[in-house]
Amino acid sequence: MTLSELFQSYSSQLQGLYSRQESESLITWLFESYLGKSRKDITSNFVLDAFPLELENAFSELLEGKPIQYVTGKAPFYGRELSVNSNVLIPRNETEELVHLIIKENKKSGMRILDIGTGSGCIPITLALEIKYAEVFGLDISDSALSMASQNASSLGAKVIFQKCDILNEEIPFNNLDIIVSNPPYVRISEKEMMHDNVLKYEPHLALFVQDDDPLLFYRVIVQKAKNALNANGKLYFEINEALGSITLELLTDNGFKNIRIHKDLNNRDRIVSAVL
Ligand SMILES: C[S@@+](CC[C@H](N)C(=O)[O-])C[C@H]1O[C@@H](n2cnc3c(N)ncnc32)[C@H](O)[C@@H]1O
Image (tube, rainbow, N blue to C red):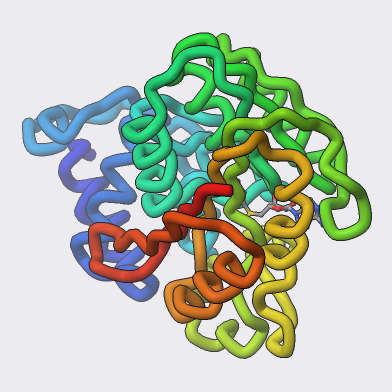
């Protein structure tokens, strides 16, 4: 069988779950990971003399709806590759935009930066590698997320201090911070039905959901605690639920923050809020 025939067969089988374009890009990703073959090899008449068992197993998982990042154990983020497993959220494009905004707006060296709800560690690891001499910390309630984040930091050579903390019930264990960033759980339980099955089935619910009657729970607690942990003129950056921009803005105004801005993502949705103490 040629690589191109296998590509056609795999991508047509996937088309029950994904669009044709998505299926083709997923299979390209799979071939790169398990066969070391690029898109160019797929279009040539390359003949496959053996099927690695790993590739077949990975394809079966993909057919069951498992996200490709959990199948390969790798997720791209800001030009680097992070390891991921089912204990951590798959880093999203809008989080890359959040990180990019922080890097763009904060060029000073030696800043103290804290990420709350760190998951794979994508935010603090990238900030530690992109901002000169930053002192970077990451908190999470989940031991298994913290262990994935530490593994990512050490394999990418990023210096980040990770610590276990339940932000809803404990104080922020650091002070004199210049920046606090957080992408906390913000999906309302009622929004579940609009979500893709493979998010609901495979991604950690601890990372995603909040009760409908208190969707700003994490934001309210973090805003309150940040007032003690930030330096004067310290900055707060949040990723937000696109439906909750104006009430997040109100929350920050009521707590005395200034220069409050809502930033739109590439799809023109309200996805980031920043403010200064
Ligand atoms: C939306 S995920 C964000 C993960 C990562 N920062 C990212 O952007 O991909 C939220 C994270 O908050 C953590 N979390 C949930 N409840 C928490 C709590 N009470 N205290 C601290 N972290 C919590 C979850 O374990 C999860 O890693």
